[in-house]
Length: 489
Image (cartoon, rainbow, N blue to C red; front, side):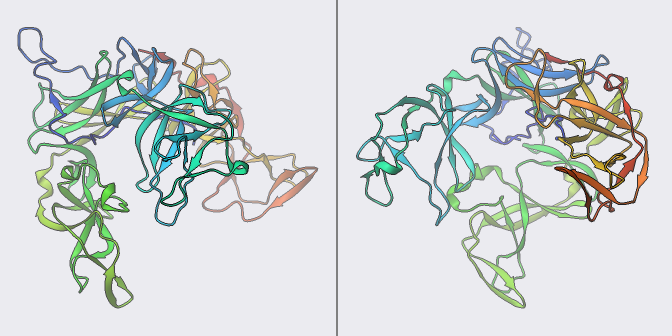
């Protein structure tokens, strides 16, 4: 699946899409009223019997999705594609096996047997038996599978495969190894994308978990038969296909370097292409956003590039395609963007007919400036101004007594260097902890000094147009900013 993921882990942190028809269900069976009549799908993220939606929500009703908590496994998780469907897979602390390195790179791989068939994992203090791990393809830069960390094998045993031959590892280089066991993906909640049956044209796609959980998952153009996402075009905001190739830079289909080429991502080889049938369109971008859309043409086995005034054969061909017929931008549905204000917060919403997407980024209704989620001194999650963590105090005088602040707006938050646990949240969920919020002050253009050990040293090259400073900022109570308490739903 490649549907636009809008309600995953889009956290407002400090300094913060699917087109396989055989898997995309129209909710005309699973979302009926019991009498065979289709009913609209509920849109808000909500938990089920096992998965719990993590949210930050203001009293006035503005909500920000913070991901999922698997109450059975006591872990945070995220919906991802696996070879056994879309499942909510645990986050954090995963061990990793690295495979398929780019040409010329060396990736140490260990084995438990003399035929180098059973891969092993180096044991570390953080490697726990039974923990979930990922298999990561370095060549294509993607997760290709999952495993369970197994028991340790006897010290001093293990094998490597430096070439075609499997040999015993030298004792001085041999780490403590653990077995790698299969992961049963059915241990994790499976979900199915469903198109709202009550909508025509552009419809909401809802990801529904087998435990009854659900979350917004994107938009689908039911007329064109593709998933889409809002994009600026020279003919306004339109819902263009989510799975799309892009016009390549300095890459051509002919020896005269006259015919442009499209590419599907930064593909390193044909084996990295996934869901190739989903890529049916090509976008071309300019200063106005998308300036043209084409049907995708034929895959190319040879491409060319300009080197000065010469057109030469290129070794870049994987994932390259010719341009097909140009499509009028009017073919793609118009999208309206509005700001919805509730209380002291404003949230951007994209609307196409009755379908809608709520942005997880929130702004202050009074200033129009974006704010971030953080805990404050009262242990409440609030939407506070953006700022810095672990800030290096700087001053306007050589004695380092008169502070100045690097800031890009009227207010500035100062947070702890590390993110902190949130009261009432599952273990592992962290947010910035704001110590101070500063307001006011005047632009400062004089010299800047900073404390270095026992001295106060001059800081060169600041302030400048990209690093504006203020002087005379005053503390504001963090409690003056709107609360968005953490909740499980």
